[in-house]
Length: 233
Ligand code: CA
Image (cartoon, rainbow, N blue to C red; front, side, top):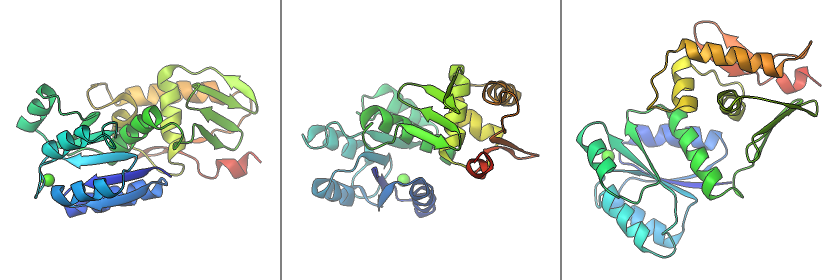
């Protein structure tokens, strides 16, 4: 179970992040002050740090520098949270030592996708590389997908789309959330692009009379059917 420490002084945001991370099996700890987070980090090192830029006690940027200077935490993955505007420009220009940054307001699925991506890179042992649902197996390490034991060839976008949906079975994602989580927030593409790639994904994985694991939720978006494993038994 990967351990994530969230250092953020906006309580509603910490509650939202804790709820979503715990739902995906993370072990979550929250600190609302920078100086307290420093003490916490000296006691135990998590697998990943989500760090707000503006914090009482000690700023996120200063904590980030200190974390990089301690031998125990020099390689700790850090995602910085910043407000839109001046901070974004500064964080881009500075070598803060953060592995990634996310600009507020951000979508939770986007942050979750970034946390997952960094952990798979930095701590593959704590993140399972296989996602399985019914007769579909997705291997994140080799980027291979099998259905009923037969290999399915997917384009890179279809692969990421399937991975993103399989990570949260039953959860309905809007087209905008899928764009954020799969294409990334710096890419500006039309929401209909999502429908095109969902269509290609379906075509590739549903050969013959195979059941469709993807649910279209009218007016809302798409979900990986959480009943799918029972349906294909
Ligand atoms: Ca703050």
